[in-house]
Image (cartoon, rainbow, N blue to C red; front, side, top):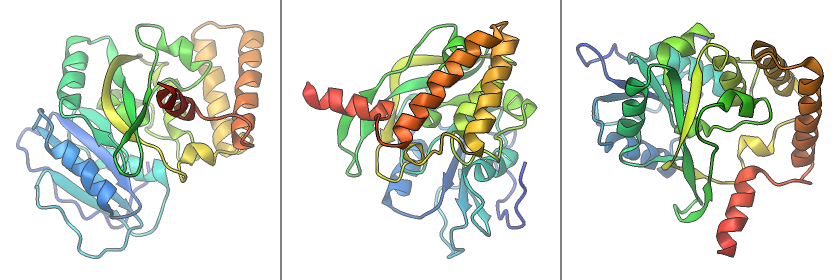
Length: 283
């Protein structure tokens, strides 16, 4: 995990520690970030800490009045996976939640997800469906996800989890080494593939987050032949082996996946969330 020379966060102030740490990496201080933080601080589950990782954002003295927000400042921009690993290293809770700096958590999100994980010791992570919103917070669609057991098999085909909607067991997350910092893109998909080799991940059909759609999203910038895609490809094959899938079957799946990534990179295919927006507009 990457360590920063300037992690200006105090030690946890919660006695035995919070129930959930929410890691929020940010590259700018704007209204969307404040909206995201407010959605976390008004959760029905109040026993939380928010680990806000400012990835190369100027040290301008910005702080948050709620003492549940811990601010970590990386002196130079290190990229999303490194910022996430820094946040993970600083987190005190046994469960780690994710929220992007421009997304919004529904009020009961963490309480519901924590209830699921504590009631299901077989699970090491739970995600959810999402509402899609634009830059002005207007709902423009829905992002559905597969549910039930067997998510590892789904992952052999594609990413089936919304990164901003995940709550994860911290011990499992650290056991697999956190995020792979070679994956400047698709670091979430790579992580789910590796986690699925040590435990089960599931989704709920409840829409527990609001996922903001904009032109600068990483999914629109992924090179299907770059290092991130290569790392993900290796993780896909490793999971397939652990599940006893044949090499030839997974090779065919990988060709289909690479073709889909290429088509999306070239603008010949819309991301899944874009189809959801279009479907919502047609209703």
